[in-house]
Length: 299
Image (cartoon, rainbow, N blue to C red):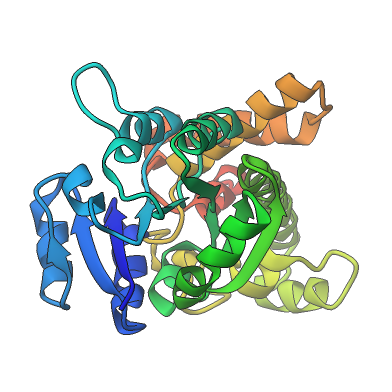
């Protein structure tokens, strides 16, 4: 039976680890929040007292962390502590599912390679609902061999697995996707609000646009206008889902990448500015579809 260490059991990591358990993996978990580990222990996971303790002896290590600095520190270690790459067995596969800068992913991949280890960056798309349902999209960067080895574990947690290219490619593809998503959400919000301002029913307008040239994912799956679609954050005071603060983070990464590659991303830059402003108004922990309120005269 394959043993997977899972480190980082937040809103995404916890359900992902649970799906590994359901798929028959032996799962060793670690998180800085003891309650998060206990929740998985009740489902059959083993707990560890440290990240390196979870990783030691595992066939696969999977991490879900906030930022590049955390990923670098955890895998590569520091003067004060060992990194994961210093304690795992020789054939352990390393999979980082965090959304971070591509440079950090490449640095960890290079450090792992020096130890003879395979590493892939595999950021996810699909949100907390996809994590719980096991329908996430994984966007992977790494060698063909590492991608093939990772497929069993990733398929236990997701429905769509893509190999974008070499190390760091998964991160680049992810931030391109989220930059586009932010632009679509803002454009959909302002169009729906303009319809409302002119007396249209937002559900009827949404139905029209879904099958017209303005159709997009936000209209199909994640309508930002309250009351139009059930079981989405906009119909629950924008609670749950993907936080504004996280969208700001991803848009920051997209603009860093644009600067590094001399890419022109005026819509991405504007989207980041709008989301930063929205977050500063106390909306940082609300779902990113709450940007709709920026266009509502009553908002």
